[in-house]
Picture (tube, rainbow, N blue to C red):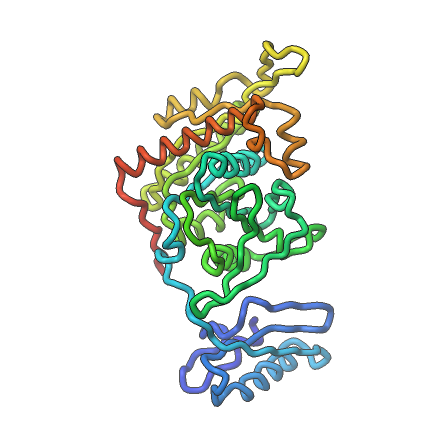
Length: 358
């Protein structure tokens, strides 16, 4: 990219990186480098000269031995402006946790399925770019989303499973390889999954966010008007400390995303042979007390049940079984999320997208 930044587009004074002419598909394999240059039209008079200049820059600043493959693309209809990306989506719900390992993705997956079981049109975005888990949880690891032309744009068609439209970076990367991307690349990928996909009409768009507070969260609040956040935590004190940070992030005056409520996951363990017994492995009702302290609703308490783990590994979310103990718990959670979302929409103004200031 540094080498390509030395190539200037005639007449503008900008280099081709500044001008946004380098597509986000740069690949390096040994001494082979490939990337695409974007032009406004196939008949651009500088197309061939820019390709040659880009090749020359790589050879001059990287190495003469590098094999350079430059593809060219012409602009299709532009992506809608921020704020107009998902016109058919009524509610955008971020499922977050301050700490990893508290079962946030399990809650997000089962919440999405439960909402679909209740008759709502649901989309689910796996926004955890570095640790995507939704393909496995929805038994869709072999799915390969394709693009279709829509109003002059090529849009990714989400995978549909159990009545939920779903996209994940996991569909586009090798599951056995670590995703070694800088923050900017991860954020660009996330924007593509949001803005370059055909999500259509949805009642609820669930965002399974990564743990903590990061570039990904900033990109989400700068790209989408998030209706509200659902915070997931275990009752453990360490997890609760991080959950506070997650709540604080959304309640920050510059972000100002309402907290719909908290979910206490792994609230207790009940063995199958002793169904009346409850063992509080991570502490008792810590999330409930935090909800009272922060003056936000407690949306539900989900017990530790072996079938939840097994269902996630098999790709059949527990919410599919509405007659099981945990299935009922997830359906109840979905009803509470609907209730709190309706209350939030009735009492509060729509969320504003966080402005990016340079």
